[in-house]
Amino acid sequence: GREFLNRFVESLWPGERLLLSGPVFVETEVTRSGPDDSNVLREARADIVIRGEDATVVIENKLDAGEQPGQCERLYWAWADRPGDTRWVFLSPSGRAPLTAVSAVSKSAWQTMSYAHLRGILAEAAEAATPRPTIGRSTAVQYLATLARAVGP
Image (cartoon, rainbow, N blue to C red; front, side, top):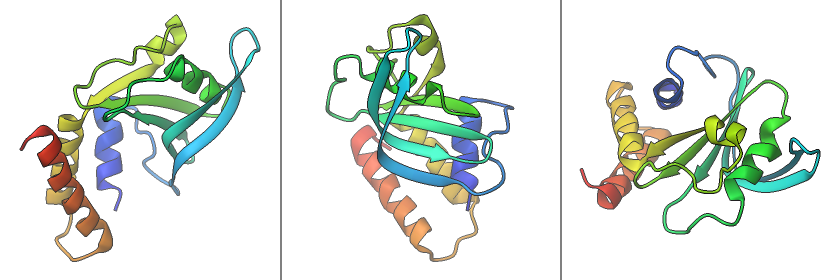
């Protein structure tokens, strides 16, 4: 169900009640363009985009590769003009801030999360869910094992 998504969003934006109801769509490798504050068109590709009725969450996932020049600044502006509430998450092994978000507005928009924090949220959600064999549960358990190998138990 939505247990993981609810916990993920609540951990980043406590009390804001984002993406709690209605359909949610998840896409990967999404390219979009939008104007920056000087009206220059910025194009960027997001690793993961979660869209719901009341919010969009843009996730940049960094495992091994470094940031491309201007990457997080471009990602911010590519989605900043989207209608509704848009949020940005920089997911990395350490939970560090993105180096390529340079404007004040972009820097303040990005939330950070470490893989260990993500693993904790997923483990809690899996434990709280009804234990029945589903593809979603199997995928979550496999991903938990992968995260444990990557960041430790």
